[in-house]
Length: 324
Image 1 (tube, helix red, strand yellow):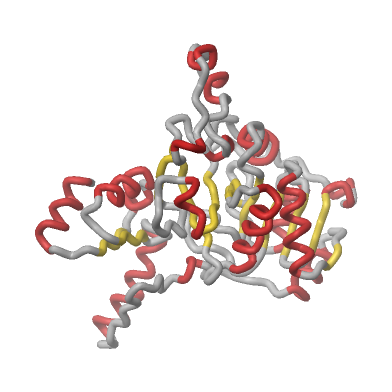
Image 2: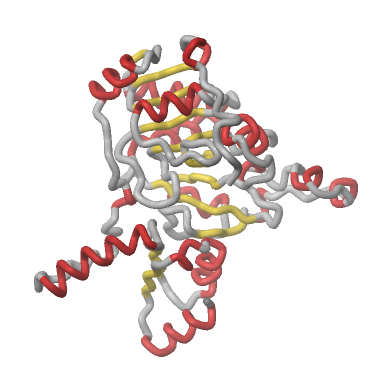
């Protein structure tokens, strides 16, 4: 990929690069292309692959067959965060949750943000369902399961108790765009979780000789940084930058979490369990909540706590789906 992109930069002199197709989902390679420095800005289609190809077909038909003009976005990201899926207003969510037997309270937005930041800082796992669903393979803060990245047990607990998969599976960090360079070796936009960069050296944790001598899962579980739940064994992370312009509610939550903890980062993984597609509707979110060990569920401005639910509605998702 570096050979291709270097040749492209040399032959064309163009300083901006857009990438699509399945290869552009290789976020490690994308990060290397960015750090290689041959392009000033890199934009990766958030649904790179067959799904995103449908957008290209539609645009080609619009321009080529209908002879309509192209509209260039300049410095703007025309996809605006890739929140292109369905949304449900507060009244619809309340109606759907009530019909599903959920017990909830309706909370004002400011209180909702503060409550969520508080339970996250307390080590709880939160199902976060707000706004239009993401288009593409990544959860981007609309259909997400969230956790505290500072916890050395969060990666294992999310994998074993909620995603029902192997404990070593990695998770990605969501970070405020304005704070990304203070935590990662990246000072650029990565709104679609498609760039990998290392945690900055001053936030890493050196391993002791005894820890270096460990093997396998024991060595994997040694904290590598101040945010061990999202730091890979090589100190890298697959980063999502969060922007107030495209997801104000999620940006506000990260800001509130930062105000409480000093950390502008959250664990962000897709709102589903192993083998199940990402949740789409409020009913999907409630079923996943009741079938896993998620502690708190936020559906728009509805606040649900696990201990307040009807125990007869509990589901067993642990053995329902086969391994990936």
